[in-house]
Image 1 (cartoon, rainbow, N blue to C red):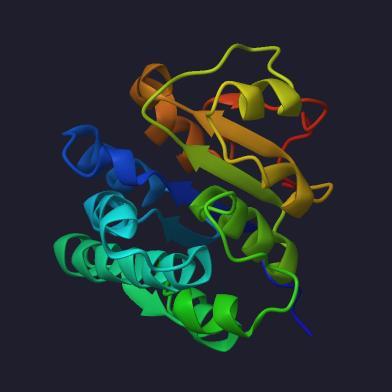
Image 2 (image 1 turned 180 degrees about the vertical axis):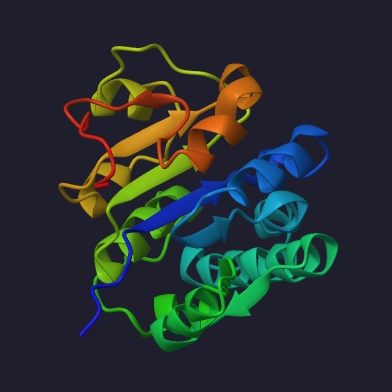
Length: 211
């Protein structure tokens, strides 16, 4: 039986939706030589959910479900724009990987069925990407952001700085976590093509992907 190649889960921030760096990051990720599942944020669609909540008065639980649908809206757009394979279940992700394709996660069904995810604004697509990486046994989690972090950043530091959501530490396992911002983009394609990760490792998560 063939052992599957290491899996990378990469989350691309919704804040990049109107940035020219979005296309450059997707192109760089396309050079990854192993299995890759992409998680997207909610972008402007999630912003609309957040903005409307105080006006309409729906609960955080309902806002959570709506934000998941916002992630799906953004995923649909990215799938069309960058020729990515939408995947709702682990089996669909595996099928995309078997075709040599990037799997782009449609989060709603899996997250709504999960009993270990708290519905609220403390759990954003960062935590959901960490949760998916744990569920899938990923070798690493890469968070692509619109800001850079320092080389010696700790998990608590990126939480307090608002770079990831407050619940993020609850969903991270022992897999390495890297955060890549604009400075990392110049070398990202070459690094990813070689099986290495761009950006800075977080806390003690410094080990490299298995070769």
